[in-house]
Image 1 (cartoon, rainbow, N blue to C red):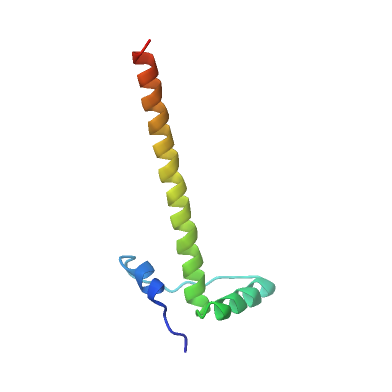
Image 2: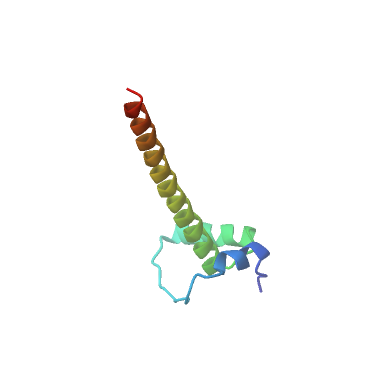
Amino acid sequence: MHERREEDNHEMVGTGMRKAVTLTLDEDVLEKAKQKALEDNRTLSNYTEYLLIKELRSEASKETKARHTEKVCAERKATDQSQK
């Protein structure tokens, strides 16, 4: 049996109901994923969920940074125009 690591517990907080899903994967991908999960002391299910959460958080972070950059650029443009 695999132990859940402390960081796993933090990731799961507030994620809502859990649902079972079926994935169709290439055999080589499946075997490599199983090996990586084992190396990371995770079940295949937990490893897959971990990777998805990590990717989704990264994407959300990119979107937040893009919105911030747009805001800063708009503020600078407004400042530049007011100084003319």
